[in-house]
Length: 566
Image (cartoon, rainbow, N blue to C red; front, side):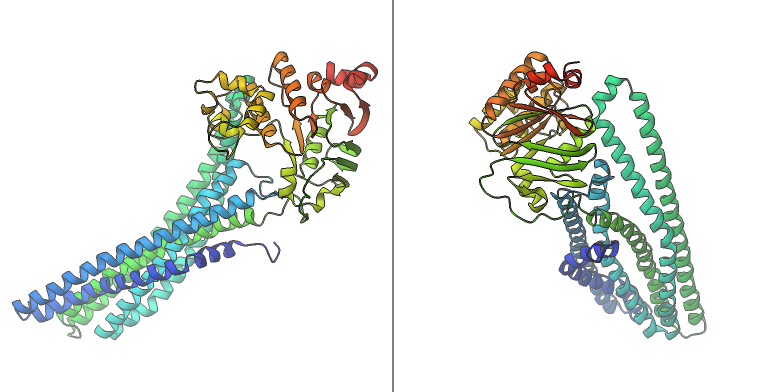
């Protein structure tokens, strides 16, 4: 990990620093609360010695009034302090979620490498929540320190022996609690890893539910998730056992410590070193200490889980970009001329290719891997291993990826629709009311026919991932969204594989009409789409095998004819 990349400790530190003021306020209020809690047994001891033992009704009423005021202060200081702590924890978690989403959506990519979408969602939710909770844990720890300090001082004033037991015994308990939290930290990280994996598999299976049903592979899919879920369950149980052992052992140590204080206090009372009221106060303070010491056990648990989650978040935030460099802004007035020179990447083997500005070019392939590699290079999802891709004579590696994506839009065939209406998916962030650009895009992609078939037209919700639509309907909406963006260069990949021949012919004509005069690339083996292009480039074995019109290649090139018409 480089010096500029965050570690788990960095993530925790930033989370705490970001809520410094709220943490300080909550800690101050909590210390006031702990001071009041510790004073309660002290005041009860005073009542016993001065009012009960002396049978003084006036003093009894006075000290009971003092106790009543103290309890009011206890209530409000706890409520306000806890509110500050909880808000700090939630805001820290929210800040982390934003940082994770920002990294995942970074135009240079890289965060999603080797991670399922469900796993990233788990990191942005559960892990961020656990790290945010560290703020509340630290504040509670400060409260506990204040409570133990006040109790130790009170016991010192009552008995030096009891005070020293608390002052010397508490650090030992804290150290033992820290050692006991180590197994929990390791198992908590494993638990989150397995849970994220299970969430990722579940999201993956749900996204492909239609395909699974079509293949009759539901049973295999369920078995795959069952295996993953069992692994996750086993990791969760191991973490739960570690937490139970830690909590149980810490409570046993704490109970023994409290018993020691009570035993020593009793012996001191028997030999006359303590009055009855002081004994009551000492026992009360010993019982009060149970709360702060249990808090320390909880804090150790939260810190262990927080450190494990912070390490997972740090790995996402520190993930290297898929592409590097590129700081130049995309010039205004993009002509849309794209050139590939000696490009080697994936299935591409030294491809030289010219995509003229303002023309509709079709690209047919014999190997689908070549299509995927070409799309990755054109959209700069990845850089070629060798060679270059240029836009208007400028290498893509020199251009800012965010600006480049606006200039060169690659519309993959498996892109996702979002929860919301059909219209909102075609025009993300668009305003209300009629929009001629949207209407033209819908008509060109034949998505207006989809809208007419829905109960509320374009305002009908399409469900998560567009699952309420058929495969062909989803394809048309996705194409309409790409056309509505009106980029200078549009690259579409197999936009009509799930529609019938008549609809495909309408879409082909609509695509040619709406993109007239703008650079458009259609990566497909569909004869209907290739027939309306100005020129077809045929990639065979990762190289340019032939160029010409669809009619010419279908007539003269046997391999092309087999790939496209067979």
